Length: 142
Image (cartoon, rainbow, N blue to C red; front, side, top):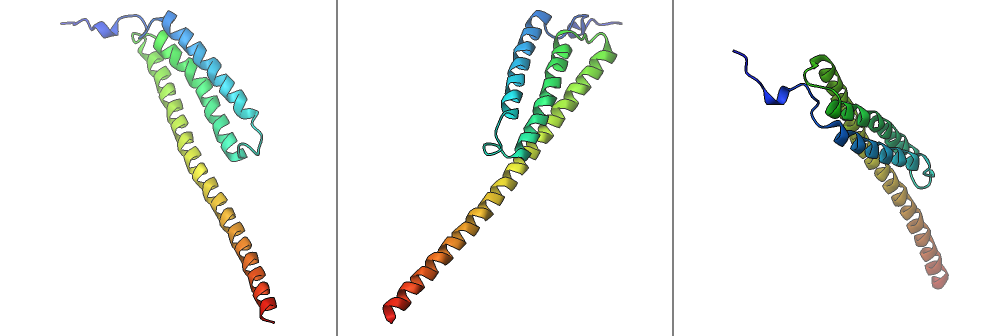
């Protein structure tokens, strides 16, 4: 006995006329973000953060049209293509999430490094102030 599954018809998951314009808008926005990141000066964004975000942007540039293909063009009735497309999309999203975690860890590293630098500067200033105070006390005692 064969049962007809309404979800497994011959068409794609969503209408192509709906998916492709949204994907195009997302792609243009992502390209603009990537250009803005590339143009950041080193004093505004550390190079390590810039490299991670550029890599994330490129992965997103590949994931957007591939997911649009998966939603609006690939048909579940063509199981091989459908499966490969969605496995690639899932892999790209996993890589993007891993880069986001790496970005968070890198941000913590940069913050810790900046904290060390600030504490070192504070120690130097306090040491100088203490030396000046001692000199003033020595002059006042003599």
